[in-house]
Structures are given as structure tokens and as C-alpha cells.
Length: 584
Image (cartoon, rainbow, N blue to C red; front, side, top):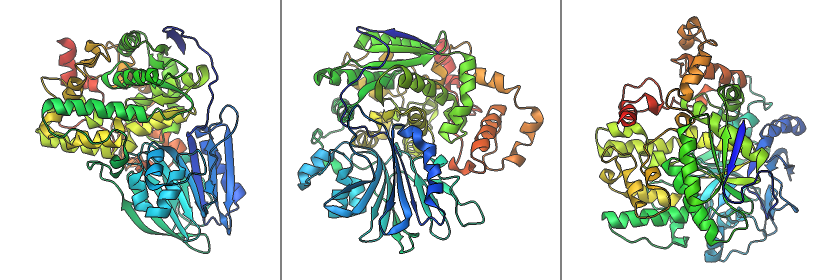
């Protein structure tokens, strides 16, 4: 990979900034293991990349077959916030969590909590003690995956944020052995007493699960609770510093509220003591994030410039557009160049990191994986902002132009949001976490998404041949980003990496054509009866996936594909609307 660094004061290499704590981590826990824990612990090391500089393995008092494992990103001098987190006030509570709780100070002040640490996740212990698990999860404004053990009441709780921004997997055997991990790769090789292979499942976003903990250390599932409907205004909005929004559905009020909520979403995510950077493709979403981020960083007088990162091949439209945005906002901009061979060589390790074989996810992940690798090696940015979630929320995909009605478009937008954990946020988490980076996605802010989804369906559909029209219009009067970027047509990340003449997916397909023969594809449904691949590219990804995760294809329920079209490929560049827009 080659690099170009632009911007005032731009320089490569690492610089040191004072850090209090980092919340990037990998969590792992076992309850009721029949095998030696020192052997089982080897599985916990499979997620060491999520926190490469510190590890703790801790047994649970009184339960010799229960334990926690925690990987953490080290900081400059002292270590704060090692887990499992325990405080003197609640000696019977053990907490392992991955994520950021943005409203921990506001909630603590409202309820009069006396925190004993600087760790934002401590609020979970206090809320649970006061309100129980369902209310606790509902009051958290942030992204999280947690394992909470209450030895006094012999309960184990699992919880995951509304959109699954933070990953969580569980293994539960017939006899009550429970394994929990940030990534599935930390569970698939666990020793257990079952003769058949126990299921490893992604934990459903927006839910908590309650388990009884037996004296033997084994568990029994009691209840799976959905703690939030993402269409409803979250309960924690009552403690938000933004306060109440102006009422009304007239266009000017709606646009003003969208801008206020989006800026608030970025502002609360500045809760970081590590250097902040931003992925910048030059599309609408990442450009709005980067511009708003830089504006707020200046207001806070942070002691460093914003580093923005773009990746692509020669003649990439993304590189050109991102350069324009970076010049406009004044960021320290890094351009990462890669060639076809480097991209193709990365596919195998990308699929291993992703734990999926979805075609569009794999394509889009290669660029994000390579740019994350560059950020980790060449810079000191650790907290990385990105534009994920906007296309699902604001109907940004090209196929929304084909929606039969605004109501059906609204329904599909909600479906996409429910499935994010299998596709875009999975990609964004795994590709950054593989290199020890921590992801922030302001478009998936609870208040922002709830408000946008509350708007009448006819306001949210594409207008005048332009997708995400309402979002673009909301920022029309600002000078945040150049006007031609504000109205730039949708370009999928994996497509914008390369020139229009030859797309990234064409490059991949040309390579794979020689790796998979016609007979293999003909027998695909026989070899892979669940989600059988229909193309050689799909077959190649599935074959690679099965090499690392045999018989785990059900982690993904279906392939991501555009709706209301006869498309046989998920790329936007294959759709009629895209072609007509380019030729216009």
C-alpha cells in the first residue's frame, strides 16, 4: 500500500497523547465448563486483536468452573478500567462489557449514583441495583455488549445495543454450559460434553437474556427480553443535554431537528481520551460526519488535528471526492492506495475476521480492512468515526428509487436497520477491531434514528431522482461540506474504491473465475444446501468461510441484495438508475 498525506501540519508516524482509558475490548466468559479452564482459556486468545495490549483471566469466587476473560487496548501510562469490573458497593456483581455509555454522567447525576471508578460502564452496576436489568438496558445511551453476573441472586445477564454495533455471540449446550464472546471465533473450539456440535449464535440486538445460575455453575435460560423498539423515542432522552425538540412536522422544523440531533450524536461520541480519526470516502455520510466532527473538535480545542482517511485504487472517484472534502474542512488527510493484487490477497484474512460469506460485505470490507491496517501501523488515531447506518436509515440505497410506495420503503428501511448486525455494522466492527481500533457511528444514535423513523414515510423517500433527499436538504443552508458533495449520488464503498471503467467486483470476479470451475458451481447447492451460492464469487467466499468456520453458515440468514429489481448482483453499479445517472 502507498500513502499520500495532505493538510496543514500533516505528518506521518505516531504521536503520544495523554489517555485516561480506552474502551476498545474483547469480552469472553464461561459458565459451567466441564473442561479445564486453563485449556478453555486458549479460545479467549482468538479475540486478542480486540485489545492487544492487556489481558485478564479471572475465576468466579465459589464457582470454580466459571470465569471471565478480557482483552483491552493499553494506554500511555496507567491502566484503568480492567475487567471484570467490580466495585466495593456491589461485591456480588461482576461485569464484562464492550462499548461506550455516553450518558453515564447524566444518569449518575439524575439518580445520585456515587461512582467508584472513572469507567463509564460502572453505571450498569448502579442501574441494575436500582431498576433491574430491563430498565438498565433501556436507560443506556450508547453501544454495548455486556455480561453481568449477580452471585447473590444467582443470575447471569447478557445484553446488546439496539443495532448490534458491538458484537456478541453465545454458545449454550443442552446441559447448561454457557459460553459468551465478542466474536464467534472465541467459542467454536470450546471443549464440551455434547456429542454433537453445539450452536454458536449471534446474540440478538436490542435484547437482554436472563439465566439462572445453578450451584453447579451451569445455567438455564429464563427469559429473552426486548428492551427497546428503535422506532420509539428512547427513555434516556429525558437525560439528554439537548433537551426537548421543537414540535411540528413542517419541513423547516424537521430539517432543523435533523441538524440538531445529528450534531448532538457526533458531540456525545467525542467522549474519548485517545486520538480521534475519521474514515472519509467523499460520499455524503462520511463527509457530514467528518465535517461535523472537525467543527466540534475545534470548539473543544482538542490538542491535535483531525486525521481523515480515504482508500482506493488509481482513478478512484472516492479518493478524488474525499480530497475535495478534506481540503474544504481542513483535515490532515491520508490517502491510502492499493492495487488489485493487494486487495485479492487480503480476501482470505478479511473473511476470517468478518465471520461471514456475504458477497457485498466481503467486497466492501477489503478496503476498510486495509485502511484500518494503515491507521494502526502509521498513525496514532485509535477512535475512528464512520458513516455506517445512514443508508439504511435515510433510504440511501439506489434500489429505493424503485420502491412501490413510501410505506413499503419505510418498512424496508426498518428491515435493513434490524439486519445491520449481519451486514454493515458487522463489517465496520470487524475490519476496525481486527487492527485494535474503536469504531463510532453517529448515524445510529438512538435519538437521531428514532426521530428520523417517526417522520411521515413520504418525507423520507427519494425525491427528484435523488436518494436521501431530506438529509441533504437539511444541511443545504450550511457550509459544512461542498455543495457538489452534498448532492453527490450514492456510490457504494466497494464500488467507489475503483474507477467506473472497471469496478472492484469485476476485478474480484476475474480473479475468481480461475479459482472455481463450472462443475463446482453446478454442485454448489448439493455441497452447501443452506444459502447455496449462485455465482463463482459467492462460491469462493463460502469455500473460504467454511475453511475457518465449518457448518456455521447459519450465522447469516440470507445474502444482502437490492429489492424491487431483477438484479443478480448486489453492486449499485449494476442497477439501471446508477447507469442512467452516470450517463446523464
